[in-house]
Image (cartoon, rainbow, N blue to C red; front, side):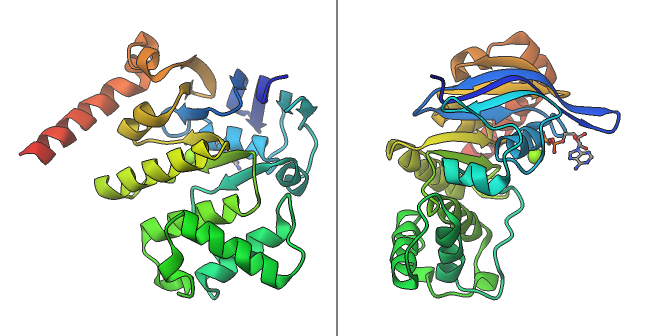
Amino acid sequence: MKFLEGAGVSRYFGGLVAVNEVDFIVEKGEIFGLIGPNGAGKTTLLNMINGILPISAGKLYFQGQCLNGLKPHEITHLGIGRAFQIVRPFEGLTALQNVMVGGIFGSKPRKNTKEASRGAEEMLAFVGLSEKMNSQVAGLTIPDRKRLEVARALVMNPKLLLLDEVMSALNPKEVDAMMEMVTKVNSQGITVVMIEHVMRATMAICHRILVLHHGRRIAMDTPQEISQNEEVLKSYLGERFARMEAERRRTID
Ligand SMILES: Nc1ncnc2c1ncn2[C@@H]1O[C@H](COP(=O)(O)OP(=O)(O)O)[C@@H](O)[C@H]1O
Ligand SMILES: [Mg+2]
């Protein structure tokens, strides 16, 4: 049985084909990267995996179960958690309260507030936010908000965690810390599917990568192979690597 499988997955918005007959397999235990230029269909694919958007055509399976037609909360209960690209915590609540809200809706709902609070505290410690537990979310920095977003997804006890650009808008040191955190999550046995534009991170921590371009799959392979794939280089990585190299030189100077 495959862990997560997509067969001919497609999504149309009116006449626009945002995701076009994509086949993919994510193995249990992997960190699986999803890359491609803006508008390639990455977020749309993630939105179909967690049921926010219905699939227009094709099939998605999670541990052998077909996800087509399931509601987001049903998919959450199967063990698929999600951290969003646009982080939208409840601004009026503390970090702890925000994570507790997640704990109440997860695949292993907490029995009472005390238990939810303990679970949330554990998660905040795991993502390195213990000290800011009682801070209002409005006062948190961007990297802290991203950590909070991951904690909110983790407290739902997912087997599969979907991450949408959790490293964007972070500085290199913050990216390093986030890479470490994703690796730590993965080492707990949680499979990760991550959309990421920060190539040095994707290349370093992903076991395999799916590349989308205009909604189509143009490659699915190890980082090593992806970095040498001609079509990928032409459509996406060429430009990215040039920028990465320039960035590296700047850092050295
Ligand atoms: N809700 C929507 N309604 C209409 N078009 C959408 C919607 N969501 C995404 N799109 C379009 O689908 C394409 C893929 O978008 P998206 O999945 O967000 O790309 P990516 O995450 O790779 O940048 C884009 O052309 C985008 O404009
Ligand atoms: Mg996106």
